[in-house]
Image 1: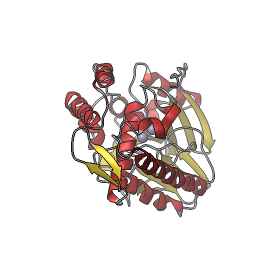
Image 2 (image 1 turned 180 degrees about the horizontal axis):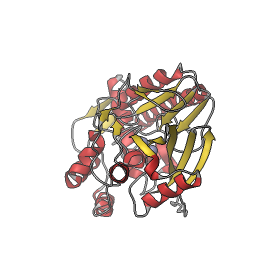
Image 3 (image 1 turned 30 degrees about the vertical axis):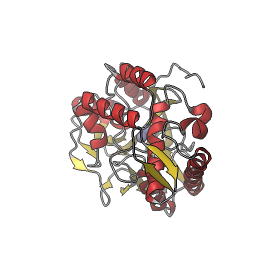
Image 4 (image 1 turned 120 degrees about the vertical axis):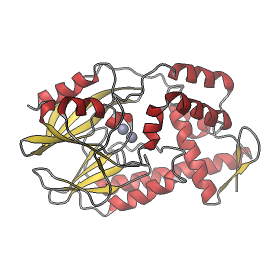
Length: 332
Ligand SMILES: [Zn+2]
Ligand SMILES: [Zn+2]
């Protein structure tokens, strides 16, 4: 098991191309030390794309990152969120309160807002899913205890002013950015494409360092959605991708192929592990598939992905669930 690393991080800003600034904001998560928000020049102000998670001191990090590139929070005229994960929309309510700006986000954000509306019920639901997935009682109780009383990562309820769906354009000095719906990583995920400058705000759909995540339980097959969403961006003319974490990257097509290959590799590994064991719970499959990546801090996240892989394989006739509790799976 790998030990989580902790680093002291502060908000940082840098210009990426004229009219586009990267705002790197610290996160309290093991293995994910920061996220990116993006400032886009727009008239006498900026469009802010994503805004970071609400944690103690997080607004100061955003302000500091803006100050480093000569901007201020008061310049924000519009807040656009690529998806409803707290590292991307957590400070939305606080930014709106400070600036009065509107918020545009995809309407399928219940995967986050259900948690914010009733954290107790959301936690109980996750515990029940984990129990059914074969997580033993003691670590499950420890995990649930650890979650109790921790913040939601949201500074307040999400109050969108406009649905960020396909066909919507976000106007900036560089020209309009076209919204493309790309569910999979999250049901609410969109990317923004600026064709004249060949830029893509890719959110967490395509990251520079390939890393997969799917929200479980909100759509029938997030893995299939994710693969479809990779097809959706594959044909775009893009010279630079500006993602939700890490540095901007070129070679979008190579990254799309890398994502497809990793999904196929994981699905094959899950099938092979099921064959080798005869049958297994989702929890049993975590060590053979994830090895070193599995630690208490990542187990919940990896289990979520495993459930998505198993349900995808079930839909393709490659895996079957057996009756009983916890749910056991077998290769079909
Ligand atoms: Zn995300
Ligand atoms: Zn993220």
